[in-house]
Amino acid sequence: MTLSARYGLQRWLLAPRTTWRARRLRADHPHLSGDEAWLLARLHRHPDEAPYAYGFLQRRTRHQGD
Image (cartoon, rainbow, N blue to C red; front, side, top):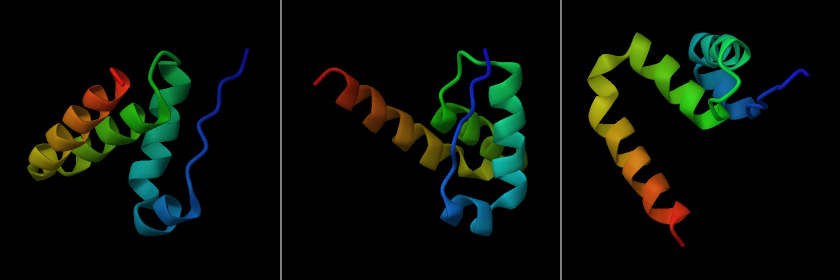
């Protein structure tokens, strides 16, 4: 079974290395969602963006309970 995460053109154009790493992470760890893989890849390259990642995760978990 092959799982693929699709990333929009905007992500490919603005952050190609992050997007490529996210695809590799998703292939190695199929339990990750595309957004989670992208977030982990982004934090690997840019750890200073952790507050933004935390905010994203908080909003995401808040909306999952709806």
